[in-house]
Length: 343
Ligand code: ADP
Ligand code: MG
Image 1 (cartoon, protein in one colour):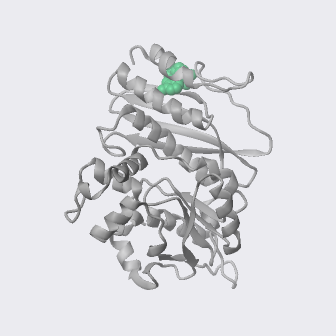
Image 2: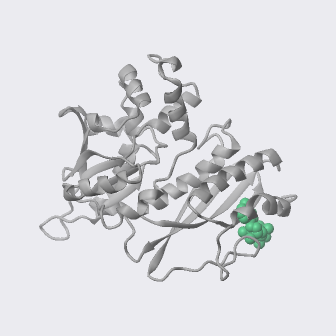
Image 3: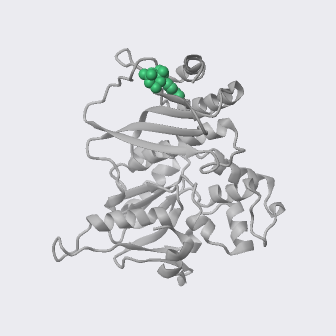
């Protein structure tokens, strides 16, 4: 791309901060990074395509924020400490104002978690952003999707459904039974902020190590992502009759326990549409499973970082997901298979 050198120097090299003397960041054929002893590298990649992963009208700042945030969210779910990231950027044109906003968004989030940009690639084409983020975990301590056990409590951080509500607000796409004026200014702002500036749960990723059995970040909706935990944990879990006896894990979810913001609560009162908090996506909160005995200790630990941990259900050995409303079955596995999730 024309002027690629200037573009990198002006907008991206300033984000390559905090490397040690032994390390090499932006400018050479590759970056050279040192690895802390006794740790493993966790590598995550996510691509955002304009019009697919964010509305085309999204600001450059928010696009950059989100592109990095969704990757850091994956690192948080693995229990990793963020280390460095790279950026592959495909741009339709060399627009200085856009690049200013974009690099500012990237800078603000990367500085917050002290994670340097160490390289990337820049090409011309339809707007597409790929971030690869890297983090460290102590040897064999990474938190996996496959660790859930029968009887585990299923928990989520903070609130769910806000990103999906934000998307409906941004696209002016609320159901007929609801008007945009039903939401207060603060509720709209909260939902839009959840959509555009998700905060990866990195402040608590260290607290999870050794305390939870499995974790996933909620990007495709609680049920779909919990489904990944169930699927992968079933594949790893064996019954009492030997290794050939596979336990199919499921979960019982109590809908009234779901932690909801006031905007999402209002949405549910007016629409009764549970698919928003269950299958909406774009939450970037964490779904965790853990031994019951660990719950109150972890909840207290996360509260110190202003993160709320809520129990929403329990892992069963029936291979089915059921959602109850005050103990009465509201959505059975068949309902959930047809439209509430995509597993
Ligand atoms: P090469 O031709 O070897 O691929 P480039 O000209 O693509 O080199 O990149 C030059 C340097 O700038 C490399 O260190 C590369 O990592 C870095 N770089 C290129 N694009 C970006 C970007 N979007 N963000 C950060 N660093 C970048
Ligand atoms: Mg290149």
